Amino acid sequence: MGVSAPHAIGASFRAVGPAGAFFIYMAATLVAPTAYLIWSSVNTPAGLGLERYTTVLTDPFYLRGFRNSFGLSLLTALEASAAGALLAGSFAYTLPIRSKRLLLAFSNLATNLGGVSLAFAFIALMGTNGMLTIGLRELFGINLYPGFDVASFAGLNLVYVYHLTPFAFLILLPAFRGIRQQWIEAALTLGATRSQFWRHVGVPVLWPSFLAIFILTFANAFGTYSTAMALTVGRVNLIPLQIGFLFGEAAFDTELADALAVLMIITTSLCIVAYRALSRRTSIWLQNT
Image (cartoon, rainbow, N blue to C red; front, side, top):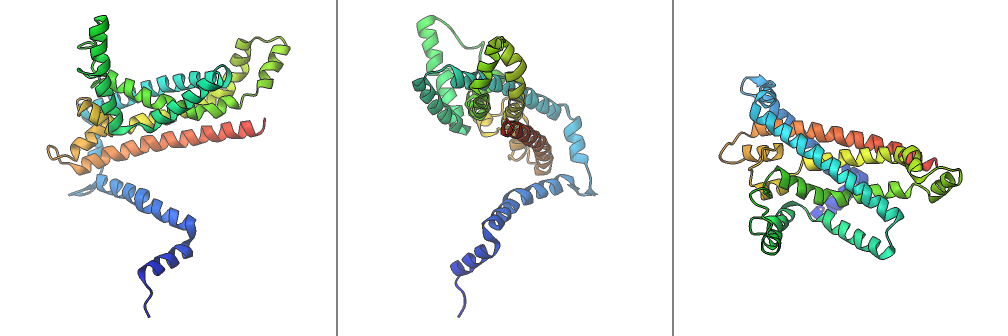
């Protein structure tokens, strides 16, 4: 008698085990597509070559896209990391219990609200006919437009910071909790001030964690597509939007889009490697304290 398909699948799963199945899944969904992108980006009618990378790295349009993407991501990462650090410090040392619960609930909600829904929420809030836009104009005589446009670089920065600040707060919170209250009390007992403690002890301890979340938020902002596309409809020159445009019917050039995607993968991979190194350093230090 033949073996049924479900039994065959179950036998195969038991043979490779859960870890093996995970690695097979990662190979099929991550390694294989990345390998195809690399091959497609260097495969030309004349053979293997780097002509598409030369085009990307010399064309002013694509260079401007990289500059805009890096600038937006750096600004967003700096603002979100700083705001997340302030929130984490307040949560750990000053906020009452009820405020902590509200902050945690809002942070979890804001972190999970992303993509197209986040863009539409800000359009409804701060668009030309958004609730806040109309409220400021009717109640206080303040006109957001044309000085501000939610579908612009500044609008994207505002939306990204809103989404990534709670994320930075949740990641930085364990680092702040790692600073023992006994350390602060010991420093005060020995004659140091609170500002001296944070300058000489607290900030050096938190600095690797801050750099790690800065790198992580940079990678997140650098690779965002759906929010930027839904909010600006392609009006801002960013690398993720350029890739989507090259896959569209107006300018169908998948190989050039693959080259841009490979450069994005390299950038985000370097960010992840740096994040892992800083996180490992922080965890080892905290375990030894």
